[in-house]
Figure (cartoon, rainbow, N blue to C red):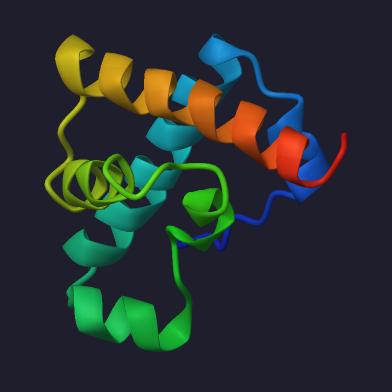
Length: 100
């Protein structure tokens, strides 16, 4: 069954490293399920942006890594460490910018 996954900004701001990784894996699983059903990435993006929920929190240099990792179902420790490190930096920057 194909699911649409929505998470609020306030929930994402509370993620610890493990919760962030689990969320990435959940998004990957959902995206892979859609791709395996025969949808193309363009068709998926016409329906929803599966990367949108994390776009605010990932630095520009890390965001494309996440997109490629999710599309290609890459889950290596090296990639996940880069994403987690970028996420933590992005969360700190977001909180500073919004005085949280």
